[in-house]
Length: 334
Image (tube, rainbow, N blue to C red; front, side, top):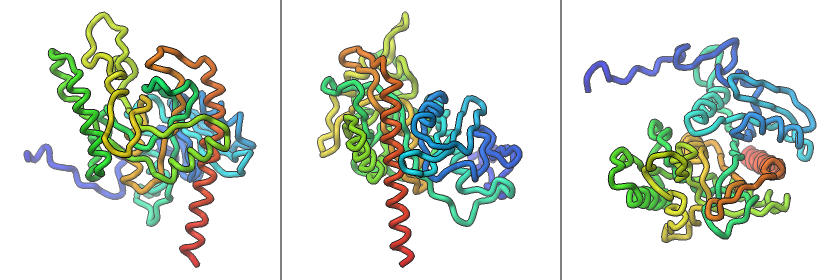
């Protein structure tokens, strides 16, 4: 490998260029470590942060809006738990920035710019919106992700180990299906390749239980995370052909030949969240209510009320997971 492409040494303390910190705060989120709770609810739209906090928080201790990234940390009225609701932005590139700073806030001394001796474990739940792929799925159903198939390329820059057998089945099936559906002349689309990641089983169970408590219809499913909204999800609104026509129909018809569920929904962030979190040992999952129904071309106009109800379920799940962690710690110290 030529010298100019040799890997830079990982110097510590981390440089200001590698880890921007302003006044002891992570640069993009504008947060200090104490501002962040150990339980984090990630939402794409910054306006959904106050929407959920106004509905379900009894108090706020932190309310920060910087570079379009809103964070509110406070207490949940129903459970008393301390939770941070954090904007992830749209798509995995924005999410990568946010997750990087959440890691820094939990694992790095931002003043000394050196790793902490003990990393604070985080529990992260993505609450987003999504489009249904299966005809039988009803608008408003909360899809709880068991696995995510990533059609983005953000995770390719994070070498975090081999896929499990189930992940290999998903990534191979999705890649083959996309390539089979690709227009013959779409040469650049030959590079499209899926990867797969798994949600923490405890998070999946907590979300399903919370949906039952909140009386929200829910469904396990494989989530497909796309790198964009229009052509990347098979939406043909442009005056030229898209590389993979009817991508939603292609994905809806996939079967993985195991006990795995089918592809239930499409969105833009879950894949990288699950891929990244597992590498760090953080518990993570995703719940994305269906507000667009691709097979019937319908849209839920009451999506804000759907998000409020699902926000309560996500917060109940975080409380249950926090209680479980405290109980596990108590047993380990006996």
